[in-house]
Image (cartoon, rainbow, N blue to C red; front, side):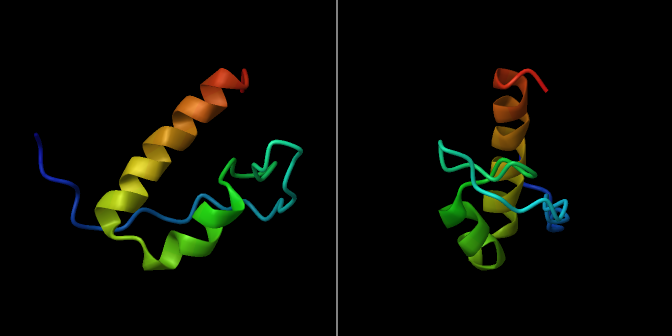
Length: 62
């Protein structure tokens, strides 16, 4: 398993902050819990979430 990048990714927030009916932010697709935990996450956790957000975006057709 490759080592996680040492630097933290930039926040995925695009200042379009509104949770949809499924509980995802319409701007960044994070859940409210993920948004709240972002600063407490390790760099590796943040990178994993960034990858997961890419998958969510694909599933939503965007």
